[in-house]
Length: 156
Image (tube, rainbow, N blue to C red):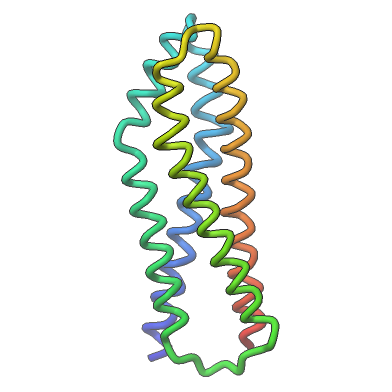
């Protein structure tokens, strides 16, 4: 049973790490390099819209996988004794996860359509808003990873 638990742990951690890495790459590499490549903001917006098309479902699939493997870990028996600090870590991790997915959904279904319909004068404000949200999402996913490590540490 311990092997199955380690496989689920690995899948959970790798999926969360991939989510974090994809967001970090997008914020720190893709957007700045694409912005410097295209001469007009309209070309940049068309490129980013093309790249982002269909991505929301991939991100939500990764989030669902992270959630399912997290729930599986809670339900799987563990040979470790549980510390009193483990449960608060798991509760905090769950709350932050819900906030993260909610912020992503708000951005994806509310802000993204507004951005695609924005005038040239409105685009810089959207860039600033999206950068702030990207940083917030990175912090939230990063905190989830840290809380996962802490909860596993407190589980021993």
